[in-house]
Image 1 (cartoon, rainbow, N blue to C red):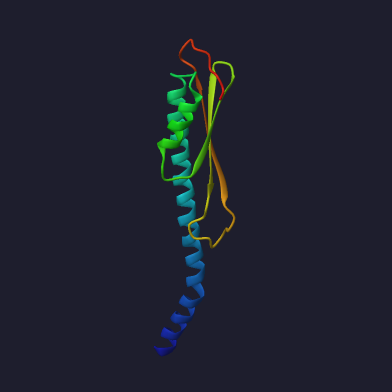
Image 2: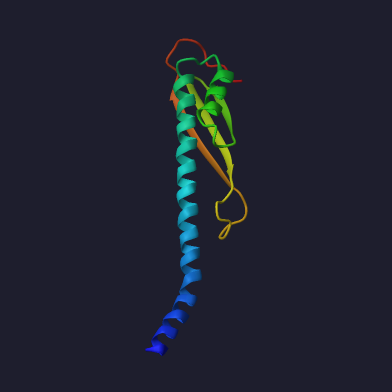
Length: 124
């Protein structure tokens, strides 16, 4: 009986670090997916505004940045493709645990939309 308990303790000591690394990876992956959804939502908010107000890229950018105050992100509004507006949102994501990766992850979301009004889309 005593040797069984000792064997279980050794097995736990060997497996626990591996399980913790796997858990850290799952937590980091979940956070990356959450951030990607936030970026996509912010870009979508910007395109929703830009297709109705194509002549106001500065306000579109402000709306994108205001869509999520949790993340430090940058937004580019591009109207150079004629009646199509493109909103690209970028973010440099730091890993939560830092166990598997130490360098920040560059994340991007890009959404395109057709301009609805007859006003020309002006890049800014």
